[in-house]
Image (cartoon, rainbow, N blue to C red; front, side):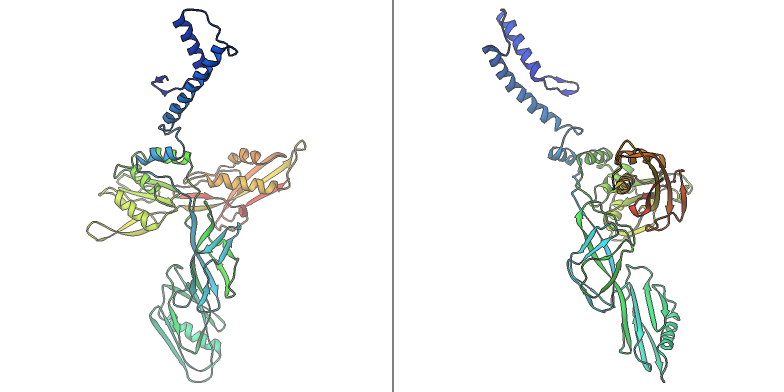
Length: 480
């Protein structure tokens, strides 16, 4: 059972047999026939087998104390000493906004929605869509004379029509009355006799009521949903547009924001990498410590920290003596509290989002941080057929899936280089001859052709706050 500077190194069975045979010869001082066909050889092999089992057991114990070799629960035990735990599998969650013509429409528990990639999302509780909490609302006068009263977010708007007027004229008057208040929480638009209010921030709803001379004809409200399958399902904004199970009162749906992305159970290798990046978890006020604490939050899939230690604004706009955390996934409040608890006292935070936290004196403090900004990438692959191999019928799908898989593994601040797709594409299928790869960029996640950066073989630069986003709808596969 040799223990060296490299640790325990188990002997192989053949080495153990050779050592036993040599020991017999040395101690008995006679020539012995120790071949496996002899009785002595059989006995030696029996003892050697038992010793080999012990060597393997000790080797297994030693390996499971080694971060690079430990697996499963043994790796869990090692990282637990640093305060880490394996990230469990999680479901993607988010908010879907649903339109209905019925004020008070019920969205039952278990209602299914789906996105453009056929991922399903289910409500986990019953919700009611109503005018007291809606992201948009359309109303119309239902009579041509009388008093018309609306209450919107606590403000009352009233017009009186003394003699018969067209419904459109009444709608014009109602719109004008509302616009006199110059609302900032919602916009006001009219089409014919219908007036529509749309919340500027869809997550800050409109609260509206009316008298009997006005009808609410359509409204949009939000419901919380959870993906039906575990894993990193990440629908783009505006792609959850299909109502799979409809109670009969729902007209349409969409998602105005990204979802909190789920994940598969953290693999051993992922956990090892996070352990290495988290070796200063027990420290405080360091980038490594903040990184480790944020990475350990449930639902967080990506963390980058950028600091500006100079006396001037840096090239991205960060003020002097500040740092910016860019975090993908996770609960916004927990992220803000974690940054606050770990940040140095004299250093400020910076970012596009602000989370209010409470300090030791129970006073509110603002913590700034950012989410990754998605850069919608288009890819065009043109190929010829290699006659000596079979080109599969699903070659286009195989190429698209390979590109999306590769792109999903690109992190923040990682440029998109067309040449790096060549190996990915050739490994994904057979029957390809020559290929060319061009990349572009779009402003919309649903744009099938580039509307921002035209196709070319040049790289697309991705800045510190950006992450390249790939989707099959933005990939073209063309046979030359």
